[in-house]
Length: 393
Image (tube, rainbow, N blue to C red):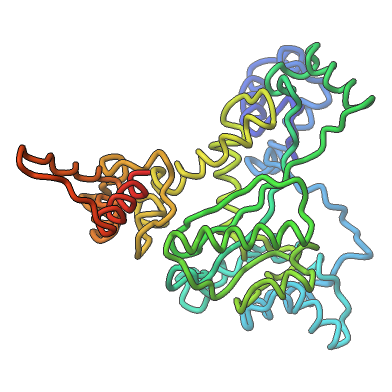
């Protein structure tokens, strides 16, 4: 068998044999950087077996006392093709029938014969299991919650800002050992499985009380965006989510914990964590943890209102909301800034646009009295003026 340091491959052996037809073997061996014995070996193999003599041979020993019998290997292949059982199931059935064999032995043999994947058994795919996906049918049907732990940025920037081994990074390490602790920041995130609308907070820990408080704030945030009813909350099996107090704080929503060690079952929020890391956490150089935490809310607005998401037809997640937004931020207070058209349509309803236009429109000026007209102020006019002033504020 060839390896990375082999001086001769199959093509190199052919060239060796061609040169040895008209020249001495010792001269050709010295020219190709191999010994005369090695050159003679390949020349003799070619003379004895032809082209098959210069091909790679298996290094398996001729005698293997502990090798799996050929009858068992044939039975493994038969069970795999007939019942489409997994390696663990085949090993269990054979052991039950009186032929003990390990699961690793079965899986290794299936890989050797090219049947380790289920789709390899039936190429047309008619009898194969189709992958199942978790679909949310409406907003609030499934809210996926997770915690991402990231390292805290020291004041002045960490090694990403100054490089590993720099004087600044060494000074930060010394401060960590003496007085300060680096620690972590826990990013609690909740994402709606239907619209991909996401809410994230940077919190100091991942305790059950912290997760419960975050869940209440996330519920209020989703309600302000039109998702007033949450039917199911999907989490992993973290300690904060296994707490009994967390289950009591769901307020009627069903708590669904995924199977252990299967984060793909909560893939929507896991993919959001990857987007958060690639486009915000490590997309630029930060000088302090306070700077990153301060800009987290701004990035969250960018994700929900501006960033196209392929899961919702290359539109922002807010474009899939059925109702209006009632907690519009300061940067969205003007009607011209709030009306963002996505494929020719605003993500806010007409009623919401009308209400916002009435709210932010300036109050009409009071009529100027004429020369013979006197202004008489009644309690109704005073109340109307007070209402207009409150609307302007």
